[in-house]
Image (cartoon, rainbow, N blue to C red; front, side, top):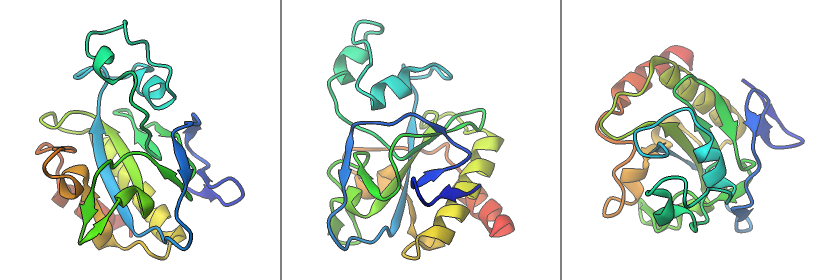
Length: 185
């Protein structure tokens, strides 16, 4: 994997630009990677609903759950689908709206200094082998690009918003990811 420095995108990712982003605060270094879990509708995989959600085109009437979320303005930098496909919604140097009210080691507003990576899945359903492999490769390229990142700056959404969020959930195997990262880094 490689990043196109002129566009600030992964060359290997399908590009689906989201309007739900803005500039990071001046002088704010990227120093955190936040892993999320998402499936839309909950428990279903492979459709276009995540793309639609992050681009504000989700049909609120297409599923009962969508009526609750269709008006939210959220995004993430990347999505790793269950089959390993990578989708990029926001350039890395822009601020994606993925963390919400959040705090990491006393620093609030984690969107300011983090990159959000969604994994297609649920808290209690194991993630796929290829998702771990792709996530490790993405982390490697990001750490090689942004000097403020290190292996210990990788957290779950549950770690920065524990009162609100549980993803990527108990099904996410942090030790497995660390082992794969050790092998590829």
